[in-house]
Image 1 (tube, rainbow, N blue to C red):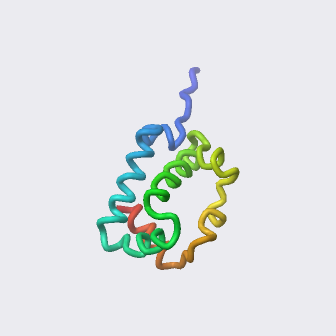
Image 2: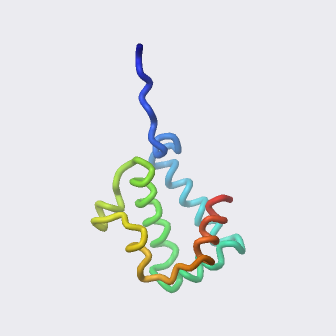
Length: 102
């Protein structure tokens, strides 16, 4: 019996190109949909959306089973530590979830 190798979520989403597409689409929604306004405001107080796009790509790459880009660049992938310079409340959380759902 031949076993079929399991794909990681990273592979199922199309590898690097798929994760880049996911992050681009997500942040395009954040920047164009009223549901994203709390995230835009929060990121403008931090390192900005361009930084967030790259960091999100790096984080999701490793989180979904691909290269550990965020860990390689920052020596961790602790979500709380990533956001400690920002005030993340239920409003921002819900905004993120709504935009990602879209």
